[in-house]
Length: 279
Image 1 (cartoon, rainbow, N blue to C red):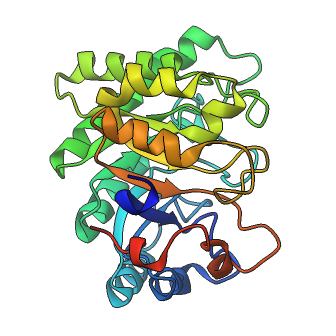
Image 2: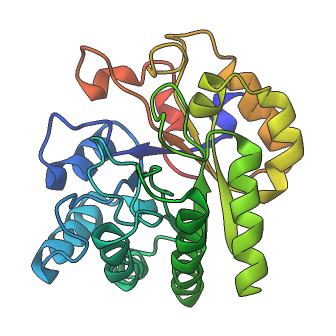
Image 3: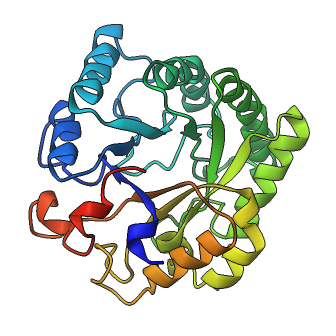
């Protein structure tokens, strides 16, 4: 048991950001990884030119890296936004315009997990109206994911860093997962369990794992405090990942941490090189 037992992927939207997007898959491969994930890379548009989508696919293919997770359009992320699908008006429209684009791109690279960030509460908007809009948008997102054989992920973030984001507990995210599955009948909505975010919320991580491992479709990790690599904080990440495995989780563990003031390639010393390639 331990880190070598896990299936890790590198989040190329937080690691290797010292490089242009199209160079990051090769950098991850050079560090020994064969699986990667991404936030929506085109923060300005939900519908980038096909040439840009093709260039990213080529970069992934040329590096021999498998994309295992992709966010739908989420507004300015990194930045002030935390998703678009519950934000009335233009942002909600942009999310809808992105659904089939993101699903088609995911299908083209064999990616089977699409993360739909819920979006912040908006001043002057009724939270119930935002939640109804969210469900209205999550249903076609789940159907698009199902069309390509993928799951739809719903993520809980942490309140200190995302104070306007309403899903800041595991139960809050699970409630949305259950609502989407009830509305579609597909059962492909799953929980994105991010151990860093949940620890920032003060949740009992072992209890969350016991309660929700069966509904978990993807896991992300960073240490706390600091959101750095495992071993830079005080979270017992190796133990928690073992607990997830014991609870039946066999999916990907995304490395979504900040490398600190060193190059990303130097931030993986906690993980033996032999344990980095996907199995």
